[in-house]
Image (cartoon, rainbow, N blue to C red; front, side):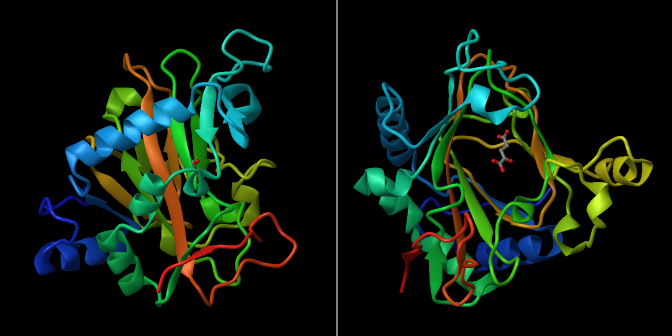
Length: 264
Ligand SMILES: O=C(O)CCC(=O)C(=O)O
């Protein structure tokens, strides 16, 4: 697994930074353990839970996902269990602080080409996964839903609660960001078809990536990833942003085409 020690400060030391970048380039993801301080994560978690009470739109409920394990409709038991508080960047300055985390921008700038932008259209959310009604997310590449000039984006996922193997942690297929897949290896909803023998063989190399509070995982928009349901006893909460080069523009008129946040 791509994991290495980090300092508690906002910047990584040179060795950890180099190893993070190497891991990312090889595997398509890297974990930055304890990148965010515990008290900062506490504040972000408190704020997220507060915003989740009678949440202002845009939001996504479990019933809206249509994923395995999701309630059938918003009217079904658990149907209005919150899955995503969307457009989170513009909701609070504390959240903006995390989006502009200097170590994340530094690593992303090294992998992509600066200056960097953050997409308001994709992720840009607090994601919840409830133990009772939280659904499973099948194998997919985020890039199959996004439209940019180049398929080169990086997502930063901060754990605000523990996300262990029982808690629906992310699973990745290392190196899949460098592979090309024929369209028929995905279903009509753009999920990778686990029943195909060539897909099943590749999925055997998948790694579960448990995170503790304050850990950040960076992953490539072409990386195959998935997450099971949450069978732990607490809701999983994470704060998620996606970055790209400012010169890698969203395709006009698509869902990706929203004014990004620009970082100098
Ligand atoms: O937590 C999950 O179920 C995975 C979510 C995910 O992969 C995504 O939103 O792209």
